[in-house]
Length: 119
Image (cartoon, rainbow, N blue to C red):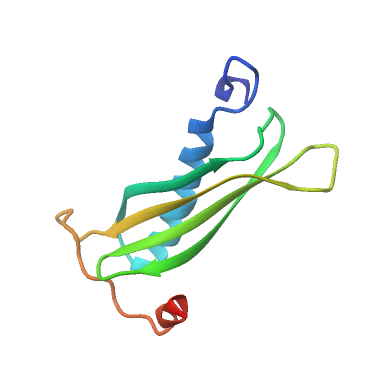
């Protein structure tokens, strides 16, 4: 929306980063089977601008699972209203920690698929 733009008329990087955090948070909460919190954002790359009216899609991949934390690679892709092609516009790595009911880090349950991440 126009209210999400910077002075040059492109969508603000902060808005994109916020949406990427939401997407990664969903992946983290599903894997953790509970509450998680963002603790670190690494390797943010803003590759292309996003314009008002573009459709933006977010894709996540869990790339590492530790004892209490997860690293999630997030990509944002845009598609204009007038074309069928998509362009990757942003990517980054977000680290989340699993939290217990008191908001303290808690161990993640083991998942056999986590071993595949290390391969």
